[in-house]
Each structure stands twice: as structure tokens, then as C-alpha cells.
Length: 290
Image (cartoon, rainbow, N blue to C red; front, side, top):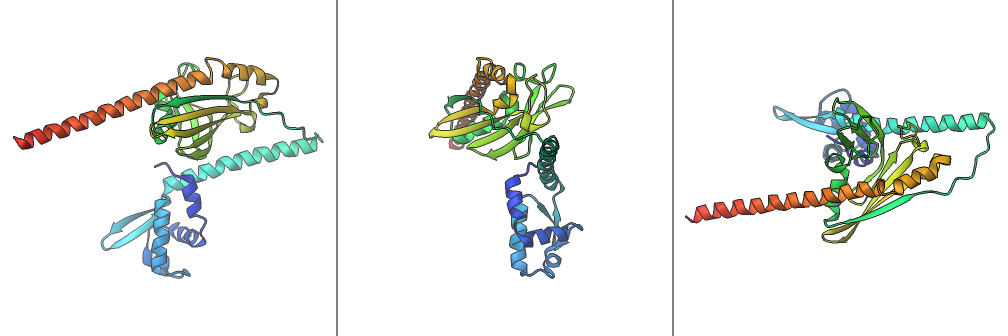
């Protein structure tokens, strides 16, 4: 399962819940044993266990007339990967700052931000608009917008903070594009776009750029989507070349055209299913009359 990292971190904010996790680290434990020695009663422990289960951190199973709780290794692994990503970036930033200090290089003034912003309005609700955009495998034009050579077969965006954004080829090989910095359905997502000026993967996010996508409801069945490719100034002397390419007809605009077509196709498909369901219900009603 994909974890909601924000919910998991919120669940860990309570010291009693952290104490419960430490007891579950030894293996499956019934609620009575978990409660023993804690500063709260058994009903409160049950409430904390429900919060931990809703966050995906804890699982429960029954054995006879007892219910055992245990840690969920999949979600804990995703939480570890999320924190590892920040740890890696923090180390890299610390190393860069230390090297600058050793070289006595003065901090330069930040460059003015350079961005390319495109918008598209789709005839669907905000939740559906966000859902389709998040499902890159459904619509991303990977044959024209790719990093792997030859182009991959699909693009995958993992739907949580710290999730990977990458391209997968037919042979199973993967090519990273970036990471998810913010995931706020159905209103906003923020991604690192870790591609250098030479159109090769750049492992350090501060040397790449960012893409922020915002979704604004303009009515029950109408959503405006803003696609902002930011921090192109990080490409230094190649910034204008990158801006020009991304702002051209084959750049961000072409990506949004593909997305808009996918939204239309998804809504047509949903309407067809709805019509089929209605037809099926009518047939059953006709049979029951006869």
C-alpha cells in the first residue's frame, strides 16, 4: 500500500503512540500487554491503536479470541525512504556549504526567478482533474517527452511526499526524473525536475528545477490547471535556452494538450460505464416485471 506520509508523521507526534510502536517492535502483541505499564488506560490505548492503524503504521489480526497488533513493514519502509531522501539532501547541502566556507567563497545574491507558466481548463471536477494528472502512466507523452534513450514505455509518479517520479522502459529499467516535494490533493503538487541543461539526470535537486501544478475549481464540472516550471535560473548561462524550449509549442504546452485529451477520454469512459449500468438496471427491472 502507498502510505500517506503526512498522516503517518502526525500519528507519530504523540509520545504514547511512539511508546506503543516501540512495544510492537518485538513482534505481534495483544492490547492487554501493550497497555501494561503505560500511563493511560486500555480504552485510551485502543484509541491510539486505531490512529496508528488509520495511518497504516500498525496492522491487526485475530488468533482465537485474542487480537494481536503488529507493525506494518511496508509503510514503515516508505516512511524511512521519505526521511532518507531529506537526510541525503541535507548532507549534500552541508557539504556544499562547508566547501564554500573552506574556499572563502562569498555567498552571492540569488538570481531572479525564471519560470514558464501554462494553464489549461478542463471540463471535469477538481478531484477528477487531480486524479488524472497524477496518473502519468495514463497520459504522459513519453515518446516525445522522455529522458531515457530509447524512450521508455511509461512514466510513474508515486503519490506521496518523497515519492519518485521516473520513466520505465520495456526491459524494466528505470530512469529517475525527480521527487515529490508536496502532495496536496486535489489542489496542488510540487515536483523536482532533476534534469540538467544537457537533458541528462541531475542527482542534486538544487541544480535542477521544480514543477508546481495547481488545480482551481471554476464550477462543479470545470477546473483550471496551472502548470508552473520554476527556478530555471538555476541553469545559469543555459537558463534562457531552457526557458525558450520549455515555453515553446513542444514544451509545457504540449504536455498540457496530452493531459487535456486524457481528461476528456476519462470522462467519456466514465459516462459510458454509467450508461451501461443504467441499461443493465433497466434490463433487470424489465425482467422482473415479466
